[in-house]
Image 1 (tube, chains in turn cyan, green, purple, brown):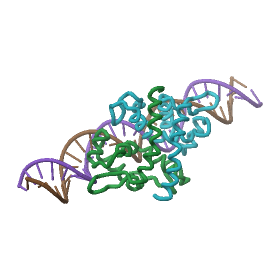
Image 2 (cartoon, helix red, strand yellow; image 1 turned 45 degrees about the vertical axis):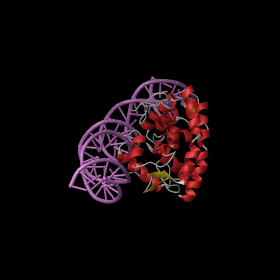
Image 3 (cartoon, rainbow over the protein chains, first blue to last red; image 1 turned 45 degrees about the horizontal axis):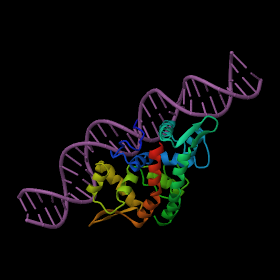
Image 4 (spheres, rainbow over the protein chains, first blue to last red; image 1 turned 180 degrees about the horizontal axis):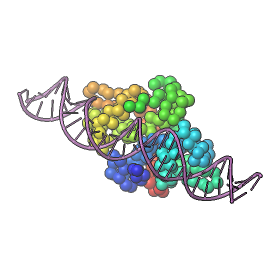
Length: 109
Length: 109
DNA sequence: CGTGGTGCTACGTATTCCGTAGCACACAGC
DNA sequence: GCTGTGTGCTACGGAATACGTAGCACCACG
């Protein structure tokens, strides 16, 4: 399994350690953005998260969750399940302008 | 090869046709965001783009470029090479807030 | 003809992802 | 204790995707 990309270290396709490169590597992994997106309105259990993502395989979900936890974007609260950390919520907020863009893309593309 | 995700149609993990789902599928493909990023300051030839992305294999680069062209984000101008379309530039602009976030992520994570 | 540039493809291998099944644990009701 | 149901999570085999190398066809320049 590929290592979780971290700013300051070499990632796939770049050895400069620049944070943007680590981010591009992280976000370019399948299901990762989708998982963050599905957590937008509150915590979800492992199984609820699976269902929300169209029943993706638990193998991949667990791999992505490990990467998200290692990156500090998601945390597991025993009571409520998986939730975005404050850092993860900031990422989501900065991603929101892309939702508007997607709407325009749908009308044009 | 997997179909290029389009808003209004079923994509991997969602059959609602919502634009955001198509976007999440598209952006979640390896190297795609990186390619858009490397085109941020002007057109690049196929080979220059390969080099900028850390010499990724031409197979994958060509696959991603086809997806980006099908999506209307990138166009090939015979004279200068591959360049972002206006739509692609809008996407890049809306992605820029994430660069700031990555810097903060580097300090915290 | 030779050299060097372009976009792009073939092919075999390595990695990643998927789908199904099922584990270990905790808690509730009986 | 014994079921039933929920939790997070893992094993394993097969499918899809990515990689790395080599090289093709084309075009311009000399």
